[in-house]
Length: 245
Image 1 (tube, helix red, strand yellow):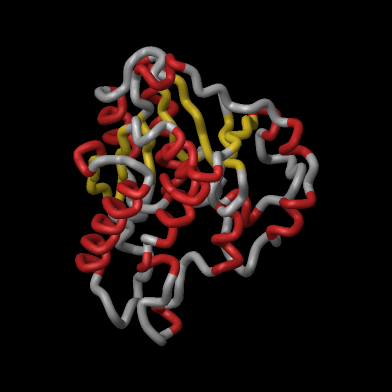
Image 2 (cartoon, one colour):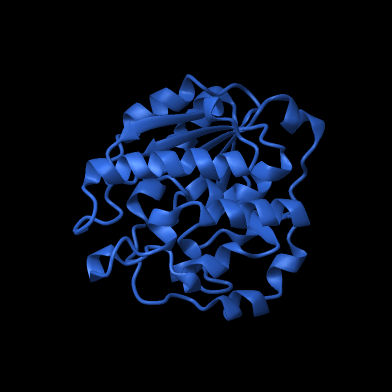
């Protein structure tokens, strides 16, 4: 269900005080996972890093990444950059950020769907051609609240049903609109990814590489940072969260 992403959202102190994550099972990273590189599907450049950047780093870059849109609508009324320019900037930021996680540029594919207009049917077909039985497909939760995140999650779920791949979903904007124990979130399917110190550091550096999102483009309100400190702190935790089937 699409939800308005407004105001400051749930404060990180509420999430940090919540005891539930300590009791979630830890996601198992065994040799089977490493044998077939997981496919990480990001609705926009940076979602792959915000959601599972630490996981990617712990897999030593042994993943493939598909970025569905170029994120050109992040600042629709920007006084500094056109949409075309923003798309190019965000593609370049993705390569830099993922490189910090150990992912080679050749392992990143930009699918070029319009930001805000994901073609769910076409995406499901494209992912079906990339997935195989048992391969992990890691993408945004289909209830995350952002329309692109939800469309990508649904398309990935369709492709996994067709191929026998294993869908792992990660929340991004859920941390904003939800609250601990929120009844609409499938916490019973949650798994914790405990990050090593090196993986956590690599993730934080990768997040910082998205200058167009974490810093203002200019002084006008339309050019404000999309990911201000109160949002970024949610992705600096010593663990990440995924929902398993």
